[in-house]
Image (cartoon, rainbow, N blue to C red; front, top):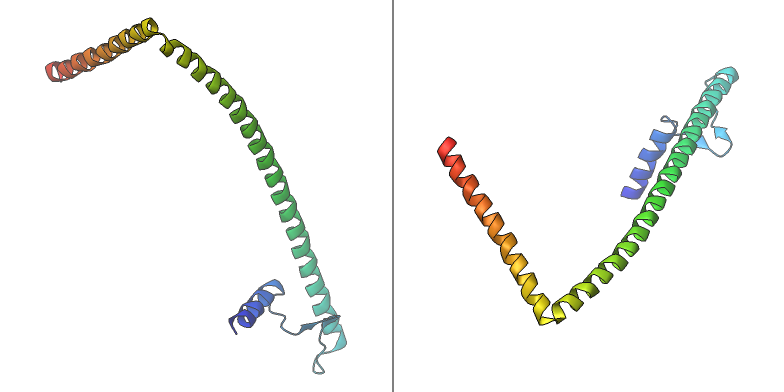
Length: 133
């Protein structure tokens, strides 16, 4: 039931409330002169032609947008693949460094140095905030 109601609503919106559209054109009424019916038919055909050309342009624009997005996604996929290769190489190098005990001690020392640097930086910044407002 609601499908028919929705169908009629969409049909009315598409055909400017020409509910009497059948195959072959607008149904002629005996109370209107023939010239009036032809003018109505011409208006309906022009309106449909405008709508079809608008829809054709719209679908062309959508197609271009989809093509652009597909190209962008392909580029991103390729960049991610190359990044994955670089990251796996970097991880292999880290594994080799950490396998040796002496390198592990040097890395810990560097880590402690960096951590202490940031700790001192934030303490000084915190003190400066309270001293100078």
